[in-house]
Amino acid sequence: MDLSRRRFLQAAALTAAAAGATAACGGSSGSSGSKDGKDLTLWYWGGALSDKVVAEAKTHFSGQVKLTTNSIGGDFKQKLTTTLAAGAAVPDITGIKGEDIASFLPNGSRFLDLNDLGFKKLSSQYLDWKTKLAQTTDGKQIGFPIDIGPTALYYRADLFDKAGLPSDPAKVAAETKTWDDYYALGAELKKALPGTYLINNLGSVFNIAVGQGTKRFIDENNHFIGDQDHIRAAWDLSVRPYQLGLDGKINDNTHNAALSKGTLTTELGAAWHALDIEQAAPNTKGKWHVSPNPGGPANQGGSYLALPKQCRNPEEAFKIISWILNPANDARGFTDAAIFPACPAAYAMPAMTGPDAFFGGQKIIEIFGPAAEAIPASYEAPADAAVMAPYLTELTNIEAKGKKPDDAWKDAVSQAKQIGQRQGVS
Image (tube, rainbow, N blue to C red; front, side, top):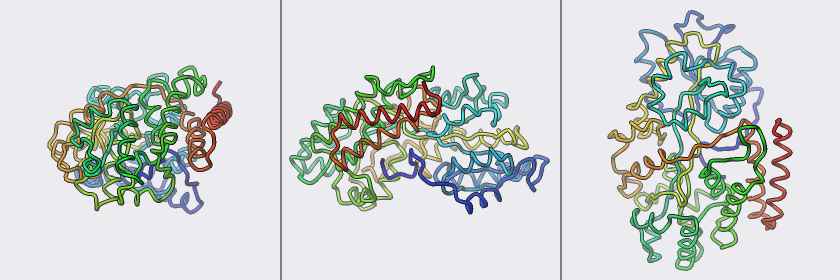
């Protein structure tokens, strides 16, 4: 997987110390905090929201409530799940990561229906496919969209120039419309610049290739479909860079060095990955550009705000989250922390339309805006992330152990079926 501030697989276990720290935060019925609705707590994680906007929210609503915010470290999902199950010290407002929202839907009763508080009147402002991912089967809206992760192709324009290839974003887009085009360009780069690679690892391709379709690993009837042609096609697309010698096989902490040294000529990633590249390789400022994702856009990540059923003042809490996530503040979130809005109205605001110095003065919203609105809608089952994990593991086994791709495919499907069955997938 990519080294990123928003990992798709949760790895950290909840420690006793962390659980104690979590229990000390927030308030709900049964907590020592105010029960009259004048004190509200918000849980989120670093990078989930603009810290500047959150700070202003405290002042903006100070006449109505006292808003206490907690940036929770470690395994956010596990801490939230444990706290909700205990029913004590539950935050009034909480973030939910995009890769976790499906797993919370079966327990939608633990959250308030935002439609009852006014979300229906606002929902048209937000991307429909994103909104629907936070709806239960009976239509309950448990999540208010924060952001999304439309994908694109990041590339080193200076290295393209050095290789004698087009480097203008429009020309690169024309040369990389399909995955076949992209790999052909990679072969030219490899020939002109020995020792460089097109992609960091196979998993980065697989994530996007799956997201470009309208089906994933489990259908809406809770049947496993991870052995069908659409997943096999994504698998084959992912394996090809390895077979062509274009795969950097980077699955460890050498990723940042590869970006900085120019070992990687391109990166496939979401809009928020721009900040990862900038932080990993500040010495490459001005050398990167962005063009559309080969084969069309996909979504990676993007989160929500939700109100647990213990929320002490739902009406004020909803006013707070709808203010934090209004179009103007959404646009500021992109400026502050590369948080790409789920609200298209923000895409035309000055905070998002200016040139980006790190990307050579390119207006990258011109790539990510159209991508956001073209992302295909797909059903994501509660067990989707767990079922996907074996495919990523087996792709790494190809890279690290030289495992034959067909053997890796068979093992991935077998393991995915077993995981699905344990979680009630038929």
